[in-house]
Length: 254
Image: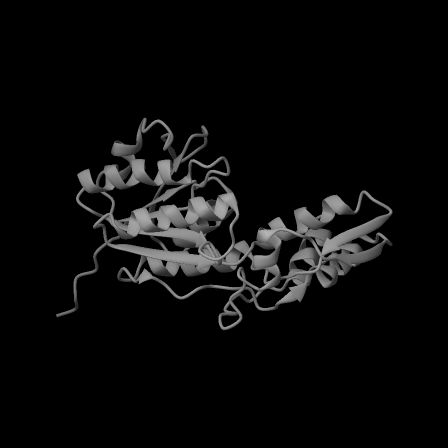
């Protein structure tokens, strides 16, 4: 007799954002039942606000897994997670998958500290959970570097990055949503570690801008942690799409 197939009901917070929408698309393409939580009004979205708690209990009710992609760059990351954890407890304790950042315990950046605090909150929650740290997204690295191209000479910090494509991270998270809770999962990184100067050169070539790129040593505790590679995962290069491939796709799509 064939084993019974049990449908997994999945909630994705921040499911209309860059990462969340990629996770939703991958899960739905695999035939999974997915519910999207967002503050935005959009088709197939359950409205809810993790900042106030409005609508969160009903969104979490009846799900088996929550993939927490919603984030906050203003220091309220732990507040969002606390609201979600409380709702998940009332809902019977679904598997909570949380995406964090490589180096949150090594780089003294405010956003990283908030991410680390959130990791600790989830780990201590008693909920079945998976915490997945990933390196910096291609889009973030491109945005940081593109701003400097407004200048005739492009200054870049003398540090390296290991950018990863959001679709690769979505693939990992979607897989984890269908697996047993892993606690702190192995880090997930992009396929290449490149200096900021090399990444800036790739942006220049992709945008057909000729600029002189000047690497500079930047003072401060945070940049010292970056220079020491605290945000890198050299032993984990599971991401497949390179930075140049990402830039080429953007150029092809205008």
